[in-house]
Image 1 (spheres, rainbow over the protein chains, first blue to last red):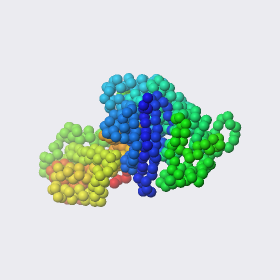
Image 2: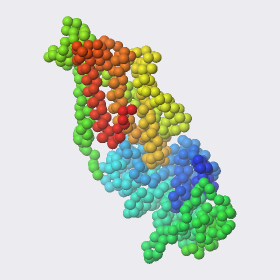
Image 3: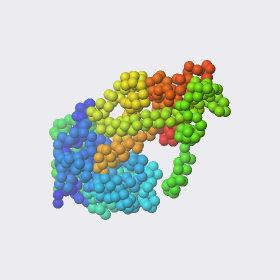
Length: 327
Length: 287
């Protein structure tokens, strides 16, 4: 079956005063209908840029899409005219942003905002919209939604607002939701509830979910497959079980070892040494090479590209066989 | 959590309870002034224009609480009818430019590009001249008269609002709710007018109160200089100008219309301060 979303060889650059920055470097990905794909990586690794490129919401300039294809449901989003994109954004494609505190407009009632998309895309009238808003709020677990639908964002807590934001994304009946760090700004207990809610909704509606996070633990719990991003590239991509059992990129191992484990006793965390590289001056070789424990002299000079080392398991490492030794 | 107040009356009362003192006093003063202007024909038995030379230059008394001027016209009557001239002029000269100033500034801030560049250069040129001087120059070129004051003000007064709206738009457009609106496939016009404008209007509304005062002063000032409203009309600035020849013999002719300007200005300033508090905006200094 053709994937719902297929990103091929996507290159996005930013022009800045300091020169060109390659924010996405030959990124490839597929998302099947109904699947959850986790994308992990540090700040600045290109996760959010990727989400916004898919929606074509990057400001251009300074950003520039240099090449590649973003096939969504058989249609190349990079070629689509603005009118078509707008139509898709409110309906088949949705995004949930990071910060619930600012994601809703403070001056309009929440219910109106949730269904504004439906009204704009011309499908329902005012009275119907209100009914739908109540229904959607109930679906995302807001108690007594018929009383709450006319309240304003400042009257709600962060977790509730995030539920409303999710309801807003669901309103158009999307096939794909891009969740860009949907729980980062929330308390841990609320985080868990929001993730559970997203997964429930996904199971109920069969939509695909791309869950962007910097938190390996969040991704481990929720995703079918995981893509690890570093310096604007996909460095490893595999199903969740494989990536946690047999990672084949040293950066993936580094990410895993830098989160505390409950069962492993009070051993020291092993942070990844060094800093992420500046995207403005990357050498020809592997961008992770300066921080890598298994690098060889070749790594600094040989360009690396992701290779399918096992069916469905991609790694952009020259020495994937050495990675096992790090565990 | 609060469930929205049941009745509109209850909501109005709740809103009123949250008004700061300055806003209550200012609004009450302003309401009285407006009412006095509307009710002028019933508040006084005299006509503002009819001359009564026998009773010229009478000091304030029970029959003429504000005295009479050199043509025997009742000064109180003229001050009351003056409300009908000064307040609407101040209002339209403030709020018409406010509307297109905010719209232009918001669009420039949202879209950027050449439109923004051109608009900002126009703003720079306008701001480079002292406001009053610019108006006087334009009125001097076009000739005195109410119409030309309107034209001069409409040409220049919007710049401050465009500046405010543009600056706020630059802040707002980076916020997530704008991104969310774009994610939902809304067009730029909908985003600017429905989503961002209500969020950036506060600062302009607060500033407009200051501007309102300045505009009334401007109209009076231009009339005083003979560039505005021509003498028989009971405009406050014109009255002050007419009365200045008699200031030693009949102080009331120019003092009391002047006082009317001061009282109106104070009412508007109080409303401005109160609104600033209520809306949580910084009060912008006078220009």
